[in-house]
View (tube, rainbow, N blue to C red):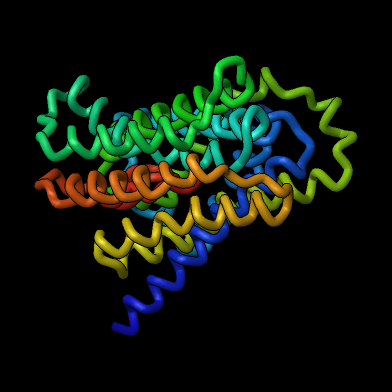
Amino acid sequence: MRNETRGTVELTLAMVLSGTLGVFVVESGASPFEVVFFRCLFGAAALGLYSLARGFFTGHGFTGRKLGLAALGGVFIVFNWVLLFEAYEASSISLATVVYHTQPFFLVLLGAVLFRERITAAKLGWLAVAFAGLVLVSGVRPGDTASLAGLGLALGAAVLYALSTLVTKRITGVRPHLIALVQVLTGLPLLLPFVDLGATAGLGAGWAWLAGLGLIHTGLMYVLMYAAYAKLPTSKIAVLAFAYPAVAMLVDWAVYGHHIGLVQALGVPLIVLAGLRVTLARAAEPAPRTVARGPEAASPAATRAG
């Protein structure tokens, strides 16, 4: 029980850190592509040093195929971050984060399309509930192009996240820290052409926020998550994961005064409940044993951290 209590504290702290992600992105003053590039850079340094100190590179378990899968998952992950951070700018941290949590449903749909996985009637029902919640949360009115753009970007980010999960969950025998390291390293050459290094020289205090995204949200946060996963049952992981959107909404209100309206608020529990039910249903299904899914989905419950 003491071990599970420690895991609960670790995962709760990780989800609270996830909820502050949007503030670090906005306060950095950098473009989404630049934010993700430096998140990858600082995050790679943090994960690399941690893995080296723990001796994870010895007997790493990578083969050419596994390395390729990790890199492909990294492509999806880094562009998922770009779209999510674009969604913050186009709408708000609250709206983007809640919509982003439709990821479990895209995982179900993509699994059915790409791998012919069966969708049960219960899952279809929860998908309908989530869609109703999405309609309420979006609060998009005719002519409200900004909110519509934010909604689309957040949904795009959710799709890319689901694709990364489907790819990287097929990697076995490799520590999740090393998979995460490969994925953030993949982002560096991918994003470099989109980064104006001359413009970033004038960010000033923004560098502290960018370093925080890498060291805190891509180093410390993942270490806490992976440590917690080994100590907790899937059901508790799935429940604690929803601390992330709750904290994100609270922080968005406290720092920027953004809040969703009453009608939008009615959709939040629908998405959360449906997502929880679908996540737990997937976790209960028999599947090949995997060590990790990736930086944002390295557990049976597919914890959704930004």
